[in-house]
Picture (tube, rainbow, N blue to C red):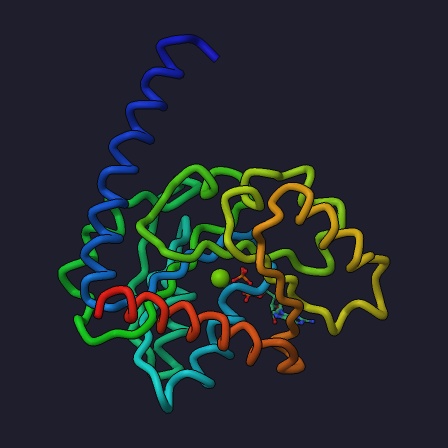
Length: 223
Ligand SMILES: Nc1nc2c(ncn2[C@@H]2O[C@H](COP(=O)(O)OP(=O)(O)O)[C@@H](O)[C@H]2O)c(=O)[nH]1
Ligand SMILES: [Mg+2]
């Protein structure tokens, strides 16, 4: 990469960081826990959010910001669960940026518990953009293969949590769960790891407990 290009990129990331820090501060003052979901297309982000919505809806208030290159489809799926959702259409950009979240910020209800952000399906660019989240989760689905953490390290090194999805497919595919977890932890020993199947409703309750525990910690800090 040319030096000039590198400088432009650093400037862009620098201003993104400032906007993200401001968003995080404002959301956390309201006691809202923000969770940024990263993964390849099709690894199960929206399906996981649909499951989480069903389980959280009776006791908690959540909303979702959806990021996609095109279409309103994911926001429509979330709204069908009775959950407020905003769709950001990037028109080609492979990641969300903090300023895009900032545009939606005035519409976000102050009494939310959880704000989920489903990033554009891509394991590479979204890893470089802080969106003001407290928790970043990377999803890795069984069909993608257990070798992916070391091939796409930044998503894993910058995350707080790894959600291995579609575990119902383990009997059908050669995915070594232990190997994937070991390599992810070698990259980032602080990762909290969850193994889930949204289809079979496995491991989702444990993941939700982690989100609730983090929300309580955030609110204790505010008190
Ligand atoms: N077998 C299986 N398929 C799943 C699971 N979760 C999602 N899928 C399927 O994976 C595909 C992509 O899911 P989607 O949630 O749209 O992925 P996204 O692009 O990451 O949001 C859909 O066909 C889902 O039905 C799961 O737990 N098990
Ligand atoms: Mg989706």
